[in-house]
Length: 397
Image 1 (cartoon, rainbow, N blue to C red):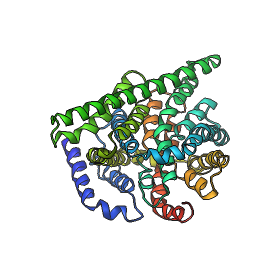
Image 2: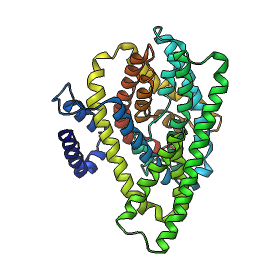
Image 3: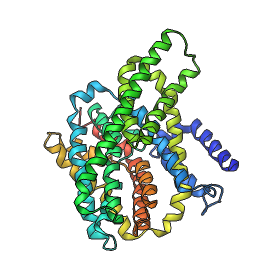
Image 4: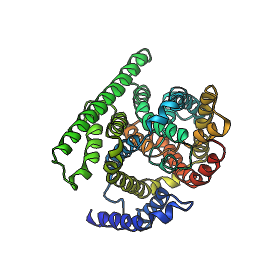
């Protein structure tokens, strides 16, 4: 265990001192860590992934997402968001269900070996986009602010919205729910996930913000301990909501939005240390993904999986978003840009672990398809982030 920890720590240090050089190239940090993880994994040098399991990977990915979502939400520009709230709203209300429906249709065509509910599970798992992988775009100053905020809000909320939908389809696929009970269960799941998540996130951040201001005025907070505040609050929002059977993702994101609004000009200094922690956690998760998952899954990919992955990243995602935003009047470059930058990543990996715990007949096949899609997304969205950011900056103001 300590040997693997040493390897992770050494590589994290090495990357930290050259991160600026990598970020100015066509290569992204996740790409580097996945490749290194694959090389150091069981099918490579065998230095990583020998003592880890899926549950450990899920916990690591969950905590990473919580930190990333909270920080991204805290950095949101609510002034811009208020003016252009229709963009993420239409993407979530129409684009997300559209992607699940279209993904199910494509899966029904390509995968006759899966049941209709298993196909719906697959489509839902790949409808969630990744806040961490999309960071290169949502943090780029050359990308128009309304597009940045739209993608940030969408990726922050769609993970949590997909969870109750996924649980309903998993129950149907496992045969533990009758068809007539679907509407009631779906509504119950949605209300619990959203309601508890929002209640926990907003209340925790409100109380924490007031307490922070009071303690700063009393001079009770030291310079060192102030750097732990945001990290602790992000994990509190996530863990409390999860323990109450709500959505930890919704709690972390909504909590981050309120925290950023209440702390205003002080938020940048407070968030910065936690942003650094979130970045390294995300990259180490990708390293474990390369070592534990890609190495063993690579030989299992089929041409139908590859085709579904490509369609999922393009038509299945882009067409519903394109149509949803067309009614709002967005121009074609904006709709194409917003549709393309829906990378699949950590949330989909967490969903895979959840699904495998249910022991579905087609579970392994679904898992391989998701892994294939995430792997391709990691590459194509990483390579295209900078050139397409420059492209959209010249066409949308």
